[in-house]
Length: 63
Image (cartoon, rainbow, N blue to C red; front, side):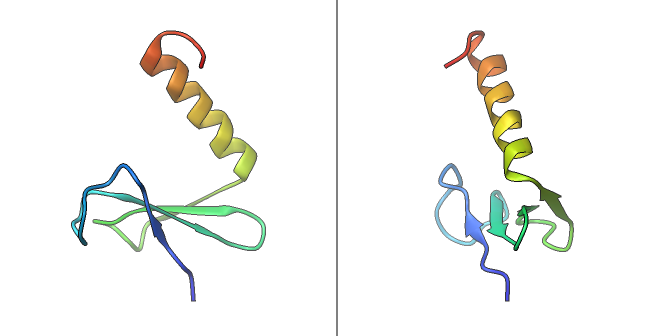
């Protein structure tokens, strides 16, 4: 059984406004709580690169 973890940026409770992450043997799994059957499989390095890119775009400069 896949163990999903809710984002720390999500609100409290079981609302449908959060991103969840789980680990498979070789990658990470992402899904939105309001559409749980739609699962995105990503490599950890790709997710880390995307998060770095989003941080730069949001702040205007690297962190």
